[in-house]
Length: 102
Image (cartoon, rainbow, N blue to C red; front, top):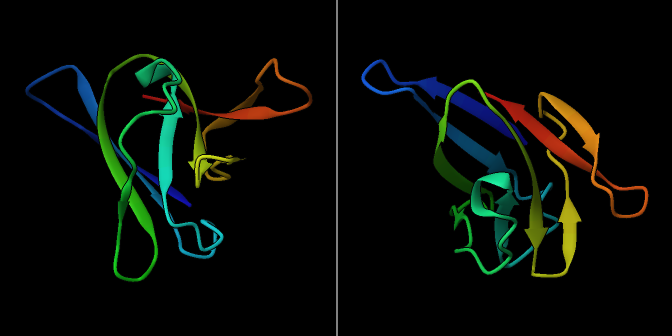
């Protein structure tokens, strides 16, 4: 798992690239990036699957904010990003959400 941040000089946004390796994706056929930035909509478009089985997605997020997110594998299993900036309780059971600061 990895998160890459690229701050734009022309606008107050950060391009954030989320990447989940094939091993981390647990051989999923589809992975969705779900979080505050898309209102936790699990019907969002899946991340792009690479030839090596990894998944990637880039989103533009307004700067000076925090966003909670998780990965949804095969529309059934939730996974955190262990390279996130922090983790916060999700409010659902004992689960945590990944947190990114931009």
